Figure 1 (cartoon, rainbow, N blue to C red):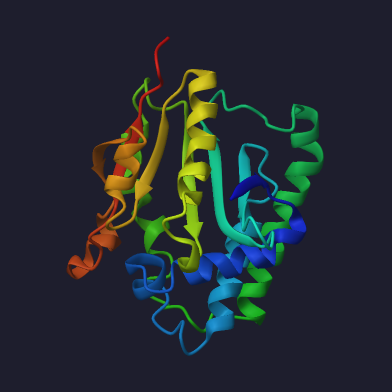
Figure 2 (cartoon, one colour; figure 1 turned 120 degrees about the vertical axis):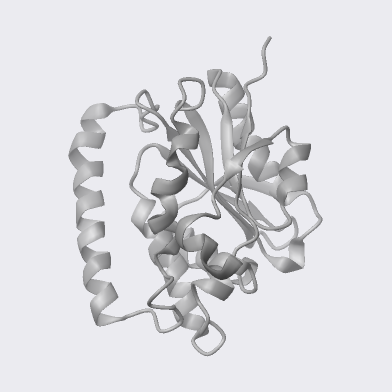
Amino acid sequence: MSIREATFRDMRAMAQVCAAAFQDEELFGLLMHPHRKEFPEDFVAYWQRRLLSHWFDPNRVFLVGLDKVSGKIVGVAYWERQGDHAAVLDGSWIGYLGVNKLLTVLTATYLHLLAHTHPNRAASPRYITALEDSFPHFAHLWSSPSMVQNWYLDLLATHPDYHGQGLGKQLVTWGVEEADREGVPASVIAAKGKEGFYEKAGFVEVGRANVGELMVEGRIEGGAVMFREMLKS
């Protein structure tokens, strides 16, 4: 297995991997997309739109994992450098304030129109924004001076056919090493049953994200907010 930074033309394959990885996951699958099996293409389209919504943010890095034989994309991750002093990864504030900002605005407008012309039939109208709606209930966990500057693992997905081959570990290691290089923590919200995986990488639980809408009827059991402190030399 190998990993590399993603390109725009990878996006469709990335979305397909995400749809397969989260097919039966409790949040993105069961709660937010109860009709995903009836409308599988809409579920893939959701992931493609989600990826696109963040694509031009210069503080995000999109990674793909590749099958060692075929070279096809079988894993996806994206990391976000958070904090007031987040690194502008294209190396230019001028570029961000110009092209990147314009592309972000145009993309948001396009996705807004697309939501009306091609609505997500796989989604639950009530719960499709449950994660975003719950953010205010746990955002404070990133507010302390020691945590505000961090590398956040926004998404990690491995195709089910490739579980257990170390690809997820590689994608996590990329961000952990960036965090250590900068001397800042790394953070993640762990899905149900994945806490042990992140603990092996040095993450510890500091709070819960399954609050607010995500606490409704005890639907979501995952949601451990986990931080990994920077290694001290």
